[in-house]
Figure 1 (cartoon, rainbow, N blue to C red):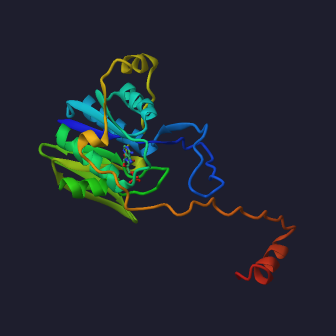
Figure 2 (spheres, rainbow, N blue to C red):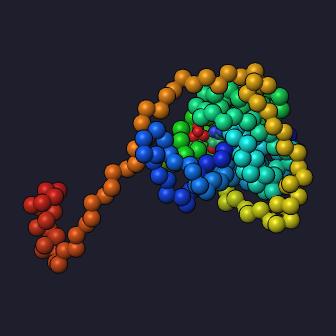
Figure 3 (spheres, rainbow, N blue to C red):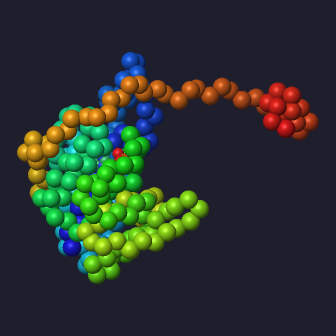
Length: 249
Ligand code: AMP
């Protein structure tokens, strides 16, 4: 079974992002970038399927600037076999990304596509769902367990207040939630080996996909600064303040 895994290059989750002075977006100058954490979980799940003998090939795909090859090489070091970069320096909306992924799916014909549930930069949580609509594949979102069973994949989904298990007919799309697995680290020998694994670079034009945007970002704002708290001397003072200042009791 061929598994396609999507990998997005995003600002590292440890970085405190700064908004540009003109509020047009986030300042990416000299900022550490990394693989989106939910995509790391997607790669790990595919590698585990390969280790169980269920997946025969793992192809990782990223859409973004040339430097996104770094994240693809990381995925190759973690166990993917081959990588595809759809190179674009534009800021692409989810629909454009989903259309490009659909073109890659048409070329690669995977049985299973694993995406992160969400990119931590845009927080869109919609690319997997859009790809499912464009391909007509079954979708299991927010997966905390994935079990391939013949021509079906059982996906346990994290839903409000519980879990739901669905059976999807392959080919299918799965988006990963946090509890699906704990991704491994790449070993040094595997990082070296990954340098020799195949990485193809395509363009939206070559895939015949228009990436024209239907959404325009008007403004990006940092969260309001929190005002400093105070220390109270006694329980009585706390109760007095909650009653008379905060007026919450
Ligand atoms: P989003 O819908 O933007 O929150 O992203 C959900 C998931 O779609 C991410 O975790 C990635 O797996 C995938 N994805 C989104 N944008 C890209 C991209 N530019 N390149 C590769 N994968 C992407």
